[in-house]
Image (cartoon, rainbow, N blue to C red):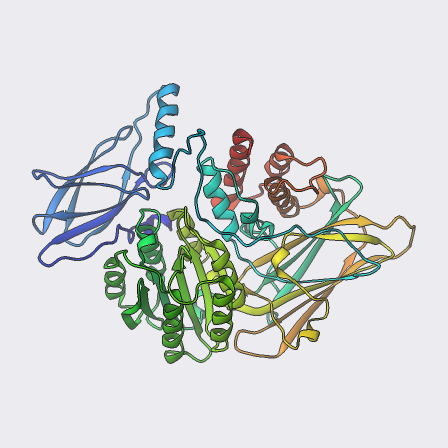
Length: 580
């Protein structure tokens, strides 16, 4: 699937009259990772370019067909015959030989330095990222059941924090504490909970186990699984791509990666779908009016023509995008604005509170919001997080092509097609069995126990087939009792096109399972939660550390479709080596 989709990826840029362009992506034949720094040369000509940090290139050829020569140290050279306007996927084969470890270390160091445009020496020998903003989060504390027996929070499956943390670890940078949102880390992964029965929207699951990092405590895991739409039953989509092309998006890890990501999405569009494109810098403009999804060449050319420059007028652009989405509204369809930006708004309304209020006003139109973050250095995570949470939306951070492929190809349905909105979870703890509890993560999603006191109903969104997981650390009551019910759970939501509140209830049995005997999914989610606590330097880690995280995760990999859990182990290893 990845190979097929990469056929449509290339370095975007302006089209010039009477110039014949070809473009493509270059990847390693074994790992299928993009290869940066490959020289792409037109044979018998002086024209040449170099692939960017994401393996993408675009080159002019002198005639309707030509031969390209691709060379890169450590790889076999390759010649490829191309024709005008080709979009290519080219694989290079590594040269198999015993590597010089010293040379490899130097190469890795050079690659890290060159691939990070915001890398800089501070004079103290340390590196820093400047001007990134994150919403302040304070860890949930243990709450006594005697005074607060009910825990309520908004359920969703935002995943931006995980890929953003991965970016910091790969670049050997300290991870900002407020960038660590544990629920987004846990919900980045696939879990093998069964889909709900036919005709039902949600299925509810729970596990109650011992706690590996605090022997006197217990862990409660609550998971919901949403029904999965069949691909041929996806509703028609009315999408507005709201693309930031301001000057801050001009670096290789922003606009070029954005263009490549949206090429993957465009490839998945159907004739019943329609797309409009709004690009904004100093002021927004309609780059493409609503266009049927089968006119891919027209949509791709509009994306290719983007270039960065100017200030960032986020307020006016958001209003324009929502107006277009409302004008093209499909009753019963998937009506959505997809905002792609580094979040650095600086014209018009720009504070987090102002942008939140703007989105709250717009969400009444029935148009959903997907926020995609890009870049580093001036990345405004706090704004994108608040926009997605207030706009019935979801939020992801794209740090490389593989993440774009995960979001727009492997998880296309769950990313774009909402099954339930305003999803809430309420857990009633039995005071006879629970002394106190602590919700791990979801700090900025905690709700009043009685949402009716606010006169409104709000929560997160869940996409097709999504699984959302929450963990509680529990201090058990010391009294001996015959009670068999630990807690009662109620999940509430509304269908995307309805205002009626629906409910799913369940009971958590009091029987405690030994953590080592729990399912792979249960143990792996706990490992990810502990990893987040370690990154935050939490006072609740107990005897837990990165070594415990690695040990738990290594024995809970399961089938690991996509190798995301294996990648997690590599991230833990990065943390241990970096001694963050």
